[in-house]
Structures are given as C-alpha cells and as structure tokens.
Image (cartoon, rainbow, N blue to C red; front, side, top):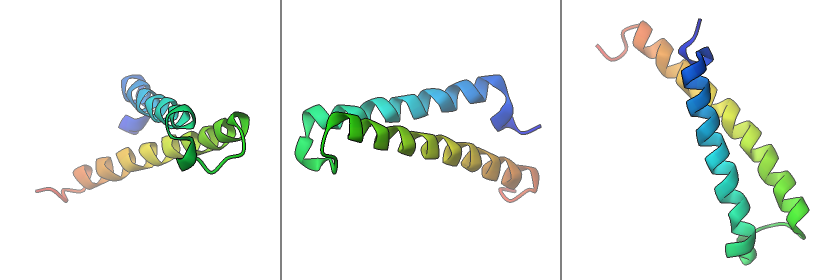
Length: 75
C-alpha cells in the first residue's frame, strides 16, 4: 500500500487540491484580464478540470518520492 492511499495523506492532498481550486476560481473576480475564459461558468469548468489533473499529479509525485525513499535514492 502506498502512503498516497492512506487516509491522512489523501486528506492532505485533497486539501491542497481544494485550495488550488479556490485560489484559481478567485482569479476570475480579482484579475479577469488574466483569465482565458468568456464567462465565469467557463472558467470554473476549466479550473475544475485543472484541479482534477493537479490532484492526480500530486498523488503521482508522492508515489514517486515514496519509491525513491524505499529504493535508497537518498542514502
């Protein structure tokens, strides 16, 4: 079992992804010129897709470093 699959780590990664999602959605109101979307619904859909990918990448990153540790790369 990977540490990325443990409840505590899953919760932490979910929190990071949720924070990313929230901050990116705030851009629509704070810096609308920086947002490549025609309306808020479009932007939120883009952010949701990005957040899903971000979460998957976080999980992969944790697994990568877990493997490096288990194989002694940091010895």
